[in-house]
Amino acid sequence: MIDGIYILANDVVYDQLVALLNSIEANAGRKIPICILPYNQRLDKVKAEIASRDNVTLFEDYDSIAYWDNFATQIWKNYSRAQKTWREWGFPELYELPMHRKFCAVDGPFDRFIYFDADTLLMGPVDYVYEKLDTYDWVVNDFQYKSDLKFIFDGSPEQMQQIFHSENLQSQTFCAGWFATKKNIFSPTIRADLLNKLTSGEADVMAFLAPDQSLFNYMVLRSGISYYNFACHDCEQATGNHWSSQFDVVDNILYDQGRRLTYLHYMSISSSSFTKLCTGEDVSFPYRDLFLHYRYLKSSADRPQNFKRPTLLRRLQNTTKSFLNQRANNIKLKYRNFKDKTTQ
Image 1 (cartoon, rainbow, N blue to C red):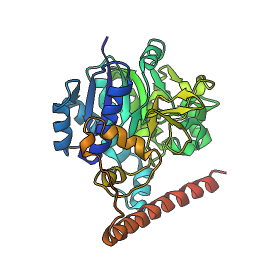
Image 2 (image 1 turned 90 degrees about the vertical axis):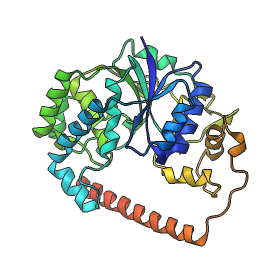
Image 3 (image 1 turned 180 degrees about the horizontal axis):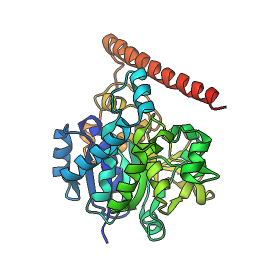
């Protein structure tokens, strides 16, 4: 039985990847093999980092990559409502398609595995997660179920009841940035059955703000595999994991009311913020020093000692980018508000 960890990455998130790898080495409690799933072919820095670590490899099953790229393409190209909305938002025809390469993990070498988005840091041992996979097929530890269901599923109540047969669907949703499962959990038969259902109309229940997350939730719930969320089923011991929460920092470990976190997720903080910080630009975000600790844990001499305010040109570029991001967010918000009104 081989336990492992998968991370989706490329050179754009290189600084975050290094910080995550160092945090795993420091806090996992044992040496765990790690496999990097390629977001795309921008991998020069990633490959150099892999070469420096004897427990890290690159996922190179190109048949699997092609399979899941095609799997996701068939689903989203046949989903006319998503296509129309992405065009209105000015997004690509296949928005965030490479994020679906997370699915390649089920074809990889590890019998049991935990998937990490690159914008996370491991804070504690994860053996308890692998052990839970002895009982359940899919394990998560997050509070997505407390968020609006429309971030995951966006169909009518009648559609969702007909498909999922659940009285409390929201309580079963999860974040696709961190999860644990097993090799081949989606068998060829299950994959074919779900693809047929999705391309025959069931995709219409999925939201499109985070396409891979919607698809993961659909496949887990629709396939009927067993599912466990520590944050939902073990509330007294569960901790937060999102950067917006107030945690205590003790010896570069985060604690939530005395309980050690398993991981911290910098979700929604742009990768460029981390890159700029590592070049000495004065970028502020929560737990910045914690990130810097792990990013330079093995190369302390390279850690920036002084942080400079961005140049006027950089500030103008940042302002423009912030404006465009805000515009995109406003478009999404207006769309959600419109949907709320039309489904009341």
